[in-house]
Amino acid sequence: MRFNINIQDITEEDMKEKQSIEPIPVGTYKLECENWEDKESKNRNMYIAVQFNVLSPGFAGKKLWENFAVGAPKAKIAKARLKAWAHATGQVLTEINSETLNELIGRPFKAKVGIDKSRDYDAKNKIKEFIFPEDDDPEILEKSDTSVGSEGLDESLLDRIVDKY
Image 1 (cartoon, rainbow, N blue to C red):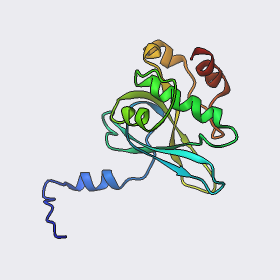
Image 2: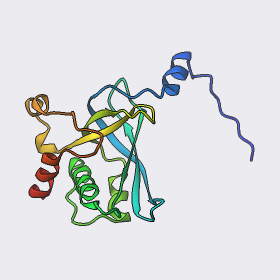
Image 3: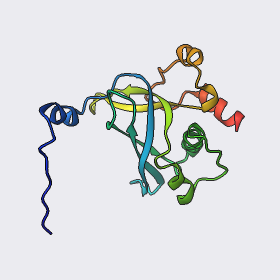
Image 4: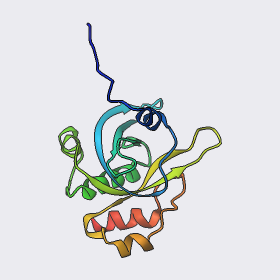
């Protein structure tokens, strides 16, 4: 297969920006799902791997990834996060399947993004909280805490998601 791609419009700034693998700063961003894939872990547990695009100015085009371990022993957290993601896009789901996940592709939403640090891996971004449309109030966002640890979802947020839906 032969191809010819014109790259004359790519500037030096474009090349530096797209090569950066540094995490974006902690904050609230507009995101969308680019794609998802169901996979199996080494322990033979199903998980859903999702790639998100940042839409917010200054960081548009940056990628974030999340694995939702829906087949793991503690799958309730992953299921609650999937439901929270759907709700953040304005969707109310009663089940997750290929069709409902496909409907979430390209649907914008807001989320609080943090940075997970590990001594074994480079720092990376993680969605700390999906912002529900009714919670998208500057006063609420300003007072909320984005310092969820790298262990996962803040228990009070999980309780709020499960109780509310």
